[in-house]
Amino acid sequence: MTATPHPGAGAATRNGVPAHPSAATPARPFAASFAAPFGGPVPPVVAPTGAGGDLDHDAVPAGSVTFVDGADPGAIAGARRHGRPVVANLGERPELAAAAVAAGADGLWLEASGAAAAGQAREAAARIAPLVRSAVPGTLADCRAAIDAVDAALATLLEHRVALAGRVQRLKPVGGRAGRDPQREAAIVAAMAERAPSLPPESLARVVTAIIEAGLDAAERDESDEPPVWRL
Image (cartoon, rainbow, N blue to C red; front, side, top):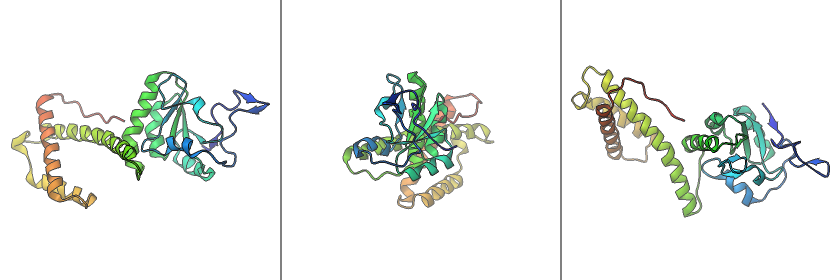
């Protein structure tokens, strides 16, 4: 896939010129105040007016961003040569949001008119963005926004981790608290310490213990043998 014109190109003209010129045209300067929404910790959802997006379609000036159809990583990476934020045109498929954010999109364009579609895309972006986008907040508000984004991803990972831990209890020969394996738990802490060397192992051990306890509680509450569902 390649960079595409603004999704509204051809739909409206101004003095015979498309109101939204091709995104593949050479980059032009754009106001920093407009670029800011695309530089935050979570890519914004751009949707039709009244559809619950972070930005309305009409709020994106012509030539201010580069559009790419779908969530192709190569196309998104290539579009960066234009020097503008890259917005993935998802059409009416909000389920592509996670893939687009993982591929590096700075924004998500939706044609779907329902607020549910914008909400689905926004939630997927919030879960994925902190894992693939780095942020260096310059203000207290920006720092809190970045923390909120990390917390959203962390909540998803914790839910899945607890669900998996609960399932482990039903698969072990001896489940529940009687079946806890100190060696396995120590190995988990050691592996986490390698990935997070700035955190003391004793701090990580407390986190792991809390997660394991939550998994044990989940196993006691849920007798279902259904596998955990990974939500994005």
